[in-house]
Length: 200
Figure 1 (tube, one colour):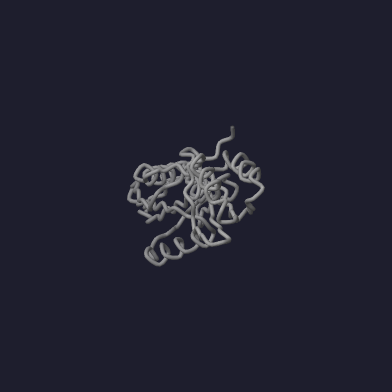
Figure 2 (cartoon, one colour):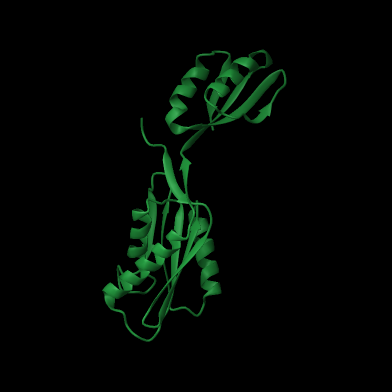
């Protein structure tokens, strides 16, 4: 049995860290695409146009295969990487964290900066509601009306609710199935012979 779940945040959250007059405002967002990331970044740059830096990191996808860390002019590795590290330590994906820095006039040094970005990001995560989601597969089932009971019995056995059902002489519906159950579900439906199953 392989793991078919991942963790993300349910809604946006905020955090803050202050050090020697500098303020680090952290904003965490649930995101699904690069376009989502850009939209939030553009909005924060408008809302906090007078801030010195907007460092960020994100991880996308249930397998965490898309990610980026950006220092936005801070010394290399002191902004984006500590934020990215907090996403990893919380085991989050589909999440963007932006930390907006207002400079307080006193230099913090590389280690001080990294700690500030890390702590602000952690505070945003601590204020977030973390949820576990399943990695799913989607199918369309097509069948004759007289086979409806067979199809419904399989859906009930797998605890799946039919989506977009159309019941006529020729019927169809869609089903969302946890990845760990998908092979067994597909084989069970295919065994009926009277039902066509397509991957969406």
